[in-house]
Image (cartoon, rainbow, N blue to C red; front, side):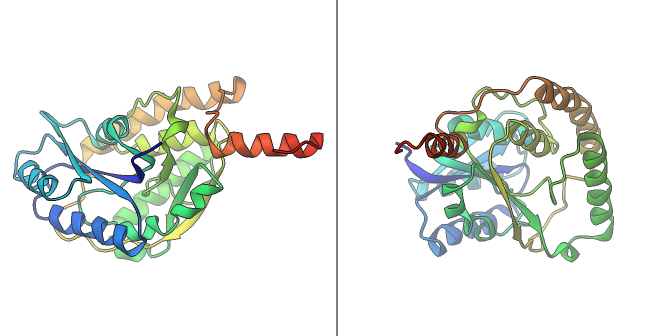
Length: 261
C-alpha cells in the first residue's frame, strides 16, 4: 500500500526567488483536488538559499520531504532520484521555477484509474517567448520524424504510475529525460492519455532549458535513445504486472474466454 496517491517531485537548482511560490502552488493543488499528496523537493546542488528554504518547508509539514545533492545531477537525474525515494503510487515532476500550475495536472489524477501515463500538452503556448516556442517546434519535429512518436508535447508535467519504471534505466540527466521516459514506457505499450493544460508565467529567474549546456545534453540524450527505440521495436520488453495496462489485458483475455475477472 502506498503512503500517498501522488508524489510531486520538484527539482530545484538555485530557485530561491521562485521556490516558495512553487511550493505554495503545489499545496494549493493538493487542497483544491482533495489529494493525499507528497511533495518531494530535490535541491540539486544549489549555491543559493534553495536548500535552506526547502528544509524550512520540510520542517513545517510531514508530507514535504527534501533531498539534497552535493552537486547538480541535472533535472533528469533529480527526477530519477526522486522516483527512487517517492512514496506515492503516481509520480510527476513539478519544477521549482514557478512556470507550471500543479493543479493543471493534478486535475487528471482520476484518469490514472484507466491508464498508466497521462501526458499533458500546452494549450496556451503564447506565455512563452517566441524563441522558446520555435525551439519546441523544431524539437518536436525531429523526434517525430526520427522515432515516429507523435505526441503533442514531450516535456510537460507527465504523470507516471511508478511501477511501470520496473526494468527501465534512465540515461539522460538533462532535459531530454522526459522524452526518453516517454519513448521507453510508451514503447512498451503502456496505456496513456494526452490532456490539455495551461502554463503560467515564471515568477522570476530565467529558464535553464535553453542554455548551451542543456542543448548539448539534449543532443547527447537523443542520440543515445535512438538505439533504444529500435531495440524496443525488435524485442518488446515485458510490462509491470501491477500496471493498469496489464490489468486491462487480463480483463480483455477473460472476456474473450468467457470467464469472470
